[in-house]
Length: 239
Image (cartoon, rainbow, N blue to C red):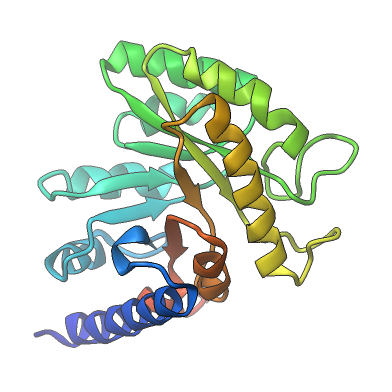
């Protein structure tokens, strides 16, 4: 193996062990949790290596990075997730490669995604991004809709042509009542997921947890964890 493949294989094995251990501690089966590797800032060559190592889910948060990378890896059997804040002027591009958009947080975005999904003759999975730090504006610092806005937005997605309501996503908040309380934050997301599934039983996906807090997410019941740094390492800053 190349040095990079050896490095990624070791990192991936470590993350897999962390997820397995977290599942054992939570009394869950390993297959209940899907690892999504966040490949932002890393080249298509790394995505190819990850695919060779068995990774099937990859995520990006910037369309300008994701679009050429997805094109370069179009021959691989991968499921692409878009996890960043998404502007409507990027929707057409994102719909071209993303199987799931995890950052749906406003009605205007739902409308744009639906229009482009229909145009491209694709079905795009959508997660409602929940902002547990939402203030008076109803939005969080890193995007997302307040818990009070989930029901309306979910109904909109569920009724939109070309879209599929898959579930909920959150990022552990840095401010507000859940700051520094990742386990409580993810537990709150699970409660909101239970509420959502009463009206939308198929919306079972719960995306939560990253490199630093995946164990808390697994303990809370997350179905998907989004891990970047722990698999790919920390890239040196340019300049």
